[in-house]
Length: 324
Image (cartoon, rainbow, N blue to C red):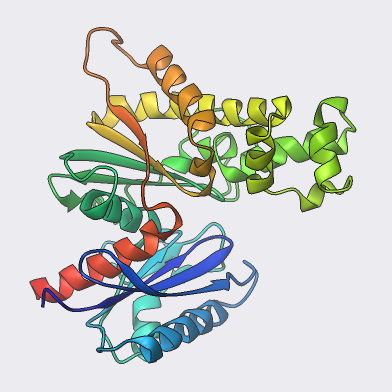
């Protein structure tokens, strides 16, 4: 089955991305749709997935062997049910069975960060690393652990939800229901929240950012902030550095827990590159326990960018079919 195609679907907080993926990781065909609002009934999200799969099937030269779904949420250990998705309406949603009733192909469901980590280990930034921790900075923070070629999903399938580690007791309220979660300080949402608050307060420091959106803070996005930082806007660069510092603090804690050889940083915010990762590396070194007396994990940017999730989901599904 080494030549078989697979379909990968990556479901994030804002987009549903799909691709027809070859065994070497090449994405042959692509499709994209907006993620339905979190208050939308679960079947509406399933409709979007089925529509994307149908489009990709029509473009395939040979029938794919399987469909892999990378979902932004807690996925059960049997990789069938989305137990909880903070940015969607799924609560104990039997996603695999719901899709199997509508798609005549094997369907495999996994956490989106697991899928991204698998792709980066197979085809991307950490191909030669035996112990990997991935951190995806997007709408929130996703995470994954890979050891000796095996994804570590935990007893109940929920390992890697680093974004919901509490780092500030009684801090910002998180969509998961708790306060002070790491993703409230080191994610795309955190970056945009801080920038918007400066615009809303009419801070002269945010004059350039405000001009970008004609004073309407609600229009500001993470990519706009990154663009402004690249253009020399000091407050945009400062905000990215602050996110990077929080990232480094969290990575130091994860190093104590997992002792990886490499951290790979993905997600939309990672597009900021050194403006994010240099402060992260500095904070990591400052906060690492036993610093100076232990090997330090490398911190690298993901290579596959926004397509890592769909590539990994497709390859994990293909791997399951081959194994069976």
